[in-house]
Image (cartoon, rainbow, N blue to C red; front, side, top):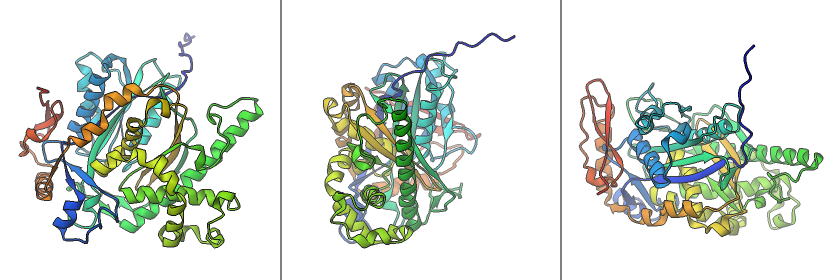
Length: 469
């Protein structure tokens, strides 16, 4: 007979204990890019809601970016590498069809004798980060948990070929320390929607650029939001009803009776570009309206809107403008506090949602954030989406101090668009190169960041860390 295993007690308040962001040293102004591209003033800055766009040349790839953000998380928070039992990666910036970025990150732990770290890469466009987060939280809440913390690394280099999509590129990465007794608790209810769509995908492995159907990807983003959000509301209501039947106060509800968007003090959405975030936020109110059109707060909404074919409202400007106007005050108080990263870095793909969450934490004093709930919408083309919530139950002051986000974003160097175009041309010309030494200068990366030293004749990549001083 096999002896029983020692199963750890079920941990409480599993969530985010620490956050670190990484973004490149250089960015361009979207105002300058409008002039450079010869387009009408406001096409990118107003039409897309973009301000700046981060980029890099061939000195950085997804592995170096991952090494930079995870090593910085470990150093800033003085985390013992042996205290990590799981590490999941979310990225769509692939440089190898077999070998994962997670295996490269193991160099940070191997030197401390820790090879016993579960988890691997998750891939589906921008959604891999949320899959990685759910994996880590579920591991800690499972009988397989060994008592150690977990790390989520998500990040991407988002670039597009020359054309209308190029202004919505960007770059950045986020690392999250996940564990019990966290100040930022991931609530257990998720509303998820996954379907087979060809709105954005990367079938050409010889290039970094995606194949994009612009109108379809907007419809996919909004349609998946409709489904994930409504599924979340239904599942949350069912969970609260079960808890009430058992006579429980239900920590998920956190004392909030509302079953619409007003239950959340803040909202973070996947951020391909600023205007789509605003549309998505307004769409949440549209869904609330459809669920309860007679609610007094919708008294000014034209009654015929509820009778429209929902699938045709993705491009209906009357519906869009009506709910953007209706949601304006909530947008400014609940969404704008999390917009710093997307404004400066642009589209960070898997890191976009968590860059928004990091900005929210960085911009909100701990005593203000504590006790609040944040609704989060994750989306990845192809497509996969989830809506869920995070509750602030403890102090986030250390995270705010360690992030120092606003100062770091302002320290980025704004360069001319020609520098950006040249950097992308260098990446394009040398994509999948063998026996290759990067042409870019490490003067253009931050002290302490990792960079690509070279690729040998067997495609093996070597990395080094730029000295801090």
